[in-house]
Image (cartoon, rainbow, N blue to C red):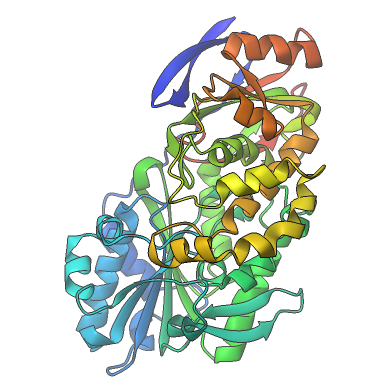
Length: 466
């Protein structure tokens, strides 16, 4: 056996795994020595688009959408700073620029959170005049219905973004459990709840071509591409994307700008160079879970659950977890979370007690999504939209059906996780004993000790015998 240090809430703990266990961790790519020059070059020579300068004219309105503050701030602060300097230099009036945080069904961020994300200079320049805004996925006055895509996705998006003379979106490309890679963020982050429900539903999330890391074949990504194309067709304008790729904490390796889909292939190729790690197909997949990731604290049981549910969906070649394998997560999740921020989570978990399959939760979507108390908390108290826990539950269905057992080692709230179909264990040794009773005494083991605290990556499943 060998000892491996893994994430366990706010600390690390050592666990003992077989000597031949494969330990995989994200390795940071080189940090670009001059990110400002990199950004300038990207917007001067974009993919599939004229230079950004040639698209700008004095007197035009510019809407800058950006990924929301669930991400590390440094890249956005640098990219947005360069954008603002250039737009002003090229003749756009300060009062004609608006920033829109692409929250999707996430919460509306506080002023302090937006300041931390955007930086003092941009916040102090644009916030007093109301030019820094949260996307609202509910307010009809702030949304514009553009119909449906051929695949049935509803395109009901942020009016201020769609009606600007120039639409710019600043995002990132990183491995993700639904799209293979993130990117084309305007399709989701700027959408209404009605729109998001048309492509975040159980059928799409658990479609066989969504539960894979192959971004080129992804069903969910296909719908995103349809939405982007439909927006451009209906508005007669194209969205100018600026996407960064990089490492832990927001270090920048490269920046790509241009129109979608033209900008995607070069960004994907660059991300592939450091986002794909070879592994054997695992009998046991072990995942360290830090104190907070994705949508917040892992004390929220649904966030802890997706900490185990997302990674096994991001595979290439073959499923990273064999049929009937075991997933072991490590986290001391207490189940005591901020219920003001995650207002509907407890009720959605309670509803899961009443159904036989996660898919059956769909019958309650509208009831929860239209609950006046929850909606008031979303509108005015910085709570996640009440429908959001459904997307997390649906994301766990693949894991719970693929694995014979999903075990959370170290939780302080075992009863809560039993309710979610997750087996609690006192510690890793106890979890390992349970796992080997299921898969046998000499399992092929893959350990991802820092999957969330470094950066998500893709498991490329290869034949261990070759």
